[in-house]
Length: 161
Image (cartoon, rainbow, N blue to C red):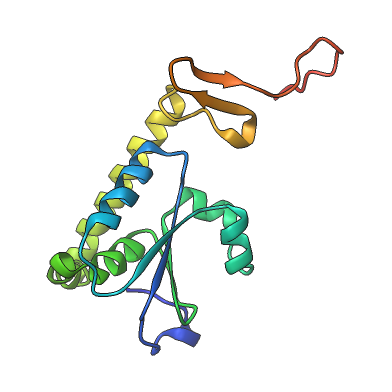
């Protein structure tokens, strides 16, 4: 597990997991994590949210939307595969797996799993399966689907991308 040099020796007693709240896979994993028995408390917080920015002002919050990030209570920051390993380490039934994934051979497997998830997410966003983001003005309404809510073009001020 890779933490910053300043916090490398500090014990992890609590983890905050930053996840993309608009990604169906990320929300599914968040829900799964919350159902797991934990040895270390985990708190999911939407990446890029006001709450995440308030708690962790020094993080690159745009990057946390692209790559899963876990933050320990002493300021340890884990990204990508290292974040998945430390989160598994916090779960009672998956700590042994986390130890295996922290070996050189296991790290390659963890990295491959993270890359596969990223590729799936990228495909979903490219083809409309999660590519509608609230920050861009989209709202999901059950029964109606996604609806664009930003101002119309009636006044001639349509924003182009």
